[in-house]
Amino acid sequence: MQRILNNPDNIVEEMLEGFLKAHPDLVEATDNPRAVKSVYPTQGRVAVVTGGGSGHKPAFIGFCGENLCDGIAVGEICSSPTAKAFLDTFTAVDGGKGVACLYGNYSGDNMNVKMAVKMAKKQGLTVKTVVCNDDVASAPFAEREKRRGIAAEMIMYKCGGAMAATGADLDEVIRVAQKSVDWSRSAGIGLTPCTLPAVGHPNFEIKEGTMEVGVGPHGEPGMEVRPLETAAGMAKIMTDVVLGDFENDLPIGDGDEICVLINGMGATPLNELYVLYNEVTKLMKEKGISVYRSYVGNYLTSMDMMGASLTVTKLDDELKKMLDTPVYSMGLRQK
Image (cartoon, rainbow, N blue to C red; front, side, top):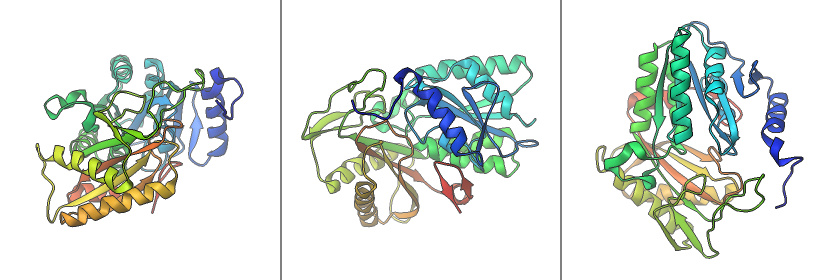
């Protein structure tokens, strides 16, 4: 393993020190070193919080900023933040109108957020939650509540943060964030495994000349292992999986508008992500589907994993307005 490290056991602390020094226009420390807050005020409006394990940059602290997330609970590499980190993040950003905690569907996050919400309630703080579960490959539609949260988490932050910025109440922020999740589906393809710094070697295997369809960000098993495809072949596989799942409740077809998010898993060159995006847009055009907004880049990664995911969000006027809202953060800047 050849990495830019000092002591692998201290990577999260050292990363946070560097992040706070690099982005004083966006974020600041709190009394808890694992709770980071935005410099933008939350007084008089709903505050938006997320959190998760480190190793997925720019998620999660990269989405702390204007009209996005107001606070981030920070966990160890691929591990959930503690309940105390979530609680301290809630209290650090509370502006008197409640807190919307938007996070991904992983067992550790579920457990610690639920504990933190209960503790917050005892302190008189109202926290409501939305759990992102967009990964089509991780469970069948009939068991959608078991699906992982992956790149659509960014869409959830974008829509929830935009609604909070309007001054809407907590129930409205939660409604729109939940709608963005319900109207989003994702599928990914992994080409190489990722390496945990403290371990020093990959935590799973993807053999040369193969690809794993639906692999999770921590190496969770996908749908199937297949021979390596061209970019066009990968685009078709992911598009078929995602649009096929929409057929269960929100069919997308001729005349519909969507948001397309191509997310790199950490080591995939941007050149290749744009090649993949180009192939996806060709497929959508053939179906008469209009791409209203697109995002291409690294948003929710898995350290040094090679691969990419496709997220499609079906749009109406409300969601288009949320996605059009300007944002300013390390991981996403939009005028």
